[in-house]
Image (cartoon, rainbow, N blue to C red; front, top):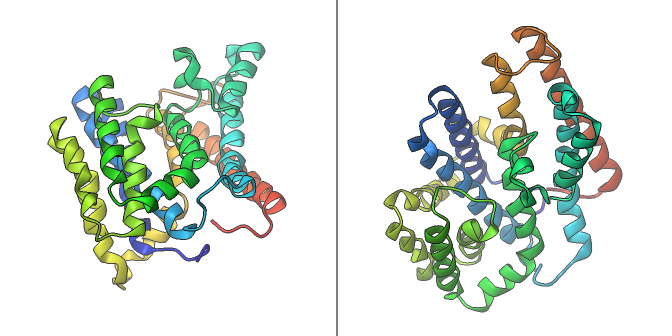
Length: 297
């Protein structure tokens, strides 16, 4: 089942990235803080889908597996690292060698959260990689926990809601903020008829809007057996969700004239950027083929 794609999950991922991109474009144009809930819905859907896909594809992973974790790491790092280097070379070379080296090192180690100066540097939307890597490490144990008791999801959401109340806002790089979402996806994959999947109702105590991603995920699951040709684009978007997460900010900034490549105009800068991103993608594919010759998604 590792290579099989679920169209409805691609639909969830497509909706997630469209909401994230839509929020960033709208916020860039308006600086309206009230729009942040749009980004939250996209982020939440992404983590729900991630938990679901891992549990659906790897139901037997319930203890630490170094080989499995290495595969997940390579899937992320093979694109993330070249993308970071590309951003430095194209847009941040004037920061200086030492600052760029330190910035890259923190990002490579997924430790850019230790300093507010580096948390959102280089690729600001890439903060989500921090909780994502934490969830990859914790997945075997969370998968076992959700299988051990169908009510465990209730405890997880109590923790998540408490963290969201404490932190405030619509997003956080702290994994606990999205822990409920990730575990919801796992529990849904294990038994979608589990009544404890109503646990997200707790988030309504913070804001009813926080219920939207869970409801959207559930409704989109009914597309499981849909064969409409209109859904044909979804696998393409779903396959490149991570690329869109990493690349959309730079494309947007250049298109709006806020960033440029070494003083070039908008169109030449866009051309150089897009060619660079294609090269990054090619490098990523090459790394995965070399290190993961038999790996699927």
